Image (cartoon, rainbow, N blue to C red; front, side, top):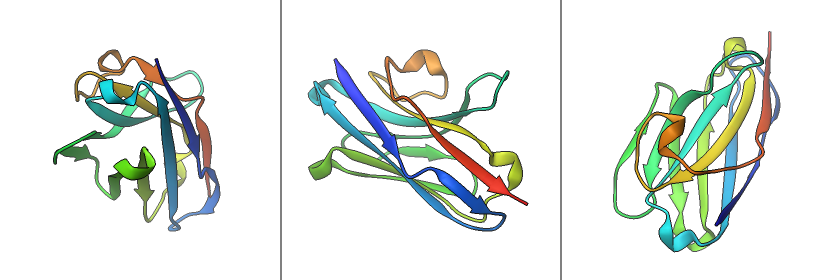
Length: 118
């Protein structure tokens, strides 16, 4: 079992930046990829980006950057020039494949709220 804990969410103005962190613990040797999703109330969970746990491969949308620090068992999501429509709960996930569907991941964090003010 893998445990994931997100942090770094909060309130940011339009055009501002935030960096989210996700620390993994437990059976991390079994992780193939980590991902970030976001979800607004009443909507489906939306893929933001993913990165392999080892080696080099990532997939991320637009102005966001995803990175990892294996020594710290941590994955980061750098969000720049944020827009109000990106106000969501952001979730970290780990899994045995690197896809863009929530079904590709089997461990989830509790989520961290990001609010982008106008």
